[in-house]
Amino acid sequence: MGAFGDRLRREREMRGITLEEITESTKISRRHLEALEGEHFDQLPGGVFNKGFVRAYARFLGIDGDQAVADYSAASNEQPEAEDKFPLEIHEQPKRNLNPRRSHLPLVFAIAALVGVLVGYAFWAKSRPHTNESAAASTQHAPPAAATTAPPANAPVPAAESTTPAREATAASSPSEPAQAAPEKPVKPEKVFVVQVKAKEDSWVSIVADGKSVMERVLTAEKNKKIKAGKTLILRTGNAGGIEVTFNGVSLGSLGNENEPRTLTFNAAGLVQ
Picture 1 (cartoon, helix red, strand yellow):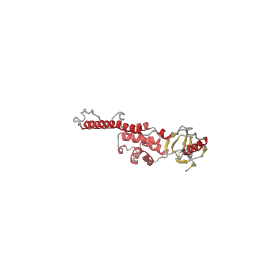
Picture 2 (cartoon, one colour):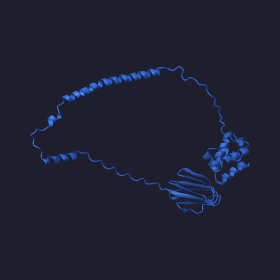
Picture 3 (spheres, helix red, strand yellow):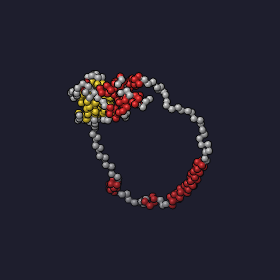
Picture 4 (tube, one colour):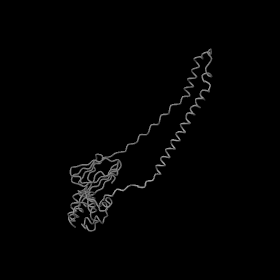
C-alpha cells in the first residue's frame, strides 16, 4: 500500500469511521473505496470519476479535498485536466426558417371570433335602452307613496308615550352583536436544550441537530462549539478522551479514553445513550 492510500486509511480509522458509513453517505461502492485505500487505481472508472471519489472521501473525513486530489494525482501519475474542458463539442447550427408553409387558419379563426364578439355587443347595446325605458314608464304610472300614507292636516299629534314602544321595537329588531370568538389556546413552545463541546486536544467531531448537520471536522484544542436543539442531537467523536461535553451547563464528566470513538444521543431530558 502506498503513502496516499495509507494516509486515507489512517485518517478514517483515527475518526472511528467504517467504509460502510462512507458508502452510505457518498453512494460510492465499498469496492471502489477499498481500491482507493489500496491504490488499485486500475479498478476505478478513471478520469474525473476517480477525483470525484477522492474529493467526496476527503469531505466526509473532514480533511482538505484539494490536497487529497493533488496527492491522488501524484500517486497515480495522472495529468491534471483543464478546468474549462467540456466533454462535448458544440457546433453552430445554420439558421432555418421556422414553419415556411405557415397556415392561415389561426388568423381566420381569430377574425371570426372578433366579429362574433362585436355582433354580440351590438345586440346587447341595442336592447339596453328599451329596458331602461320600460323601467322608467313603470315608475311614472305607479301611485305616489306619499299620497297614501300622509295623514290629514287636522289629525291630532300622537302623544309622547307612543314613541317608547317604537324605540323598543327598533331595539328588538336590530341584529344582535356577534359573539366574541373564543381565545385561541397558546401554542406550547418547543423545549430547547444546549450542548457545548470543548476540545482539550485536536479531536474529530460530528454533530447532527434535529436532522441537520451542524459540523463535521476536527475541533482544535481549546476551541468550543455550542449547539441548540429542540428534539434530538447526535454527537460523534473519534477522540472521546480529548473533549469535554456539557448539557444545559452541566458537565457530563469523562466520556472515554484518548482516541476512543463514541456516539452520544441527547434529547430535551438529557443524555439518552
